[in-house]
Image (tube, rainbow, N blue to C red; front, side):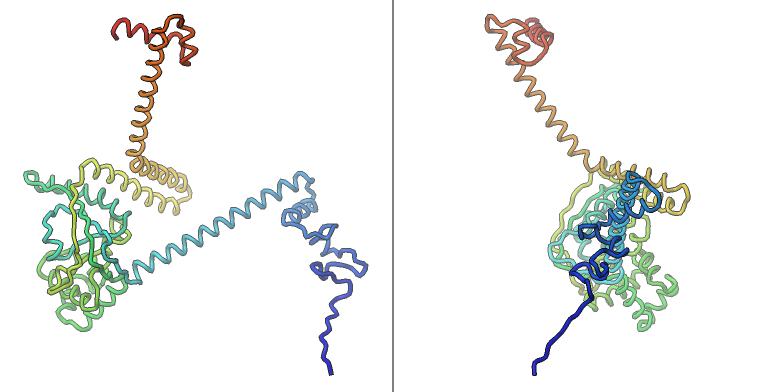
Length: 391
């Protein structure tokens, strides 16, 4: 016995135009909305134009409204894509900073700004640095200029210059904020001495301990730091995220405390370091740029909470962006300007030499020389006059 599979379909059905035809092959009302008379499928634009014509618009008005509608849809799609991209980037940034531990590969350059030029202090104590270029540019301006002013104010007779230290590591594992918080609460439960210091001085909060306790330099704070860093070191970490510079005035992306030097028998992750004296004008320019950017950020935040603030926010952001762009591009712009000037001077010298050469040849009038060289007769007379009178 042979089995067969039968498919009857729908009477009058054709491939690609199912359920949109009458028995005689003519289009139903739904089919007319979906297909052209020649059987081709109507485009989105055609459907919109028909919709507007049905509402009483002329052909020209219907086309204009359809075009406007399609442009709006494209903008909405683009904005949606941007929103998704921003959301994803924000989620990744949040995870990297707050949740996920990071590993800094060997020879990755990290940088710090300081007036301390003693290289031994990179090996015998904790120090602050960052791997992010954006942070590095920010610290040159905001922190560098602050340190310069502090030295001038408090040490007028023996002020130290500001240095940017570029450090290459042997590789380092950085505890995220979540990992630091976990280690902190483990110590609260298991170490009575640490718990007493933390609760008495830093209100039992990891954020308070990170922002206040890790920067303090008194006896109790140093003892709490030693316990905390040793605990992180035993868990395989070499550094921890600095919450203070993330939430404080610097608004840094990845400020990091490298603590191996402060831990007894700790891992020394510093492979080598080079020191650069930061020029004052560089710090001042960078400080102005970064303050403009931070100001625009705050203005933008205020703009989002004010009915009229969007205009000021846009102006502030545009101004800050322009200032930052000028600061970054100014050296390039000056170099190009100097090159154009040298090129112009070279062309002028070649042109003037041609004028003198033609003038030395008998039979060449002023007008003929001017036509040949491509200048005005006045310019030719000026060059020849200067040659004759030694100007």
